[in-house]
Image 1: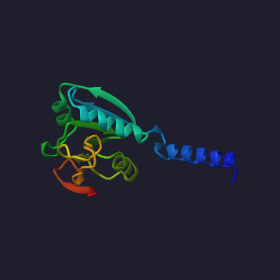
Image 2: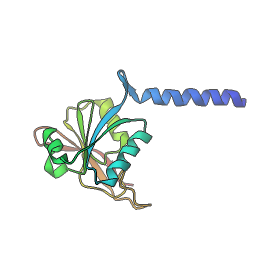
Image 3: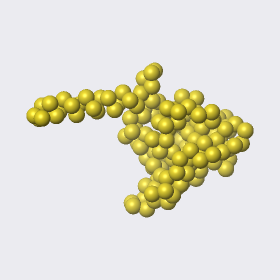
Image 4: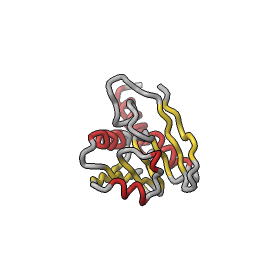
Length: 151
């Protein structure tokens, strides 16, 4: 294959991957509510953007009100709350899990990574990574593991 055909094929594959990450209504968009003093939240926003998710970034001093408004259980709380396609995303949930949530459309309120787990998106600390689980939660207080990140 000559170089120009290679470039064309590469361009087509990149274009296809971007379109694969959009909904029928356009690119995946997330609204993030975060504290003005939390640096890891900004890193998580950057993680979403690097994974072709558009972000509306809202800085607020009343993040607890947002969590209560959207039904985030206190024991699943983290430092930021996001909304995407009718779902709540709490904490350092990987972009791949958000995309999976939107693709499979489970009957849940949302996903959460409780606390601030070292090695989760936005909480990188060199090569150190703690295992963690992404938890799906519903409006009746039921939880289940949506995905595990053990490596």
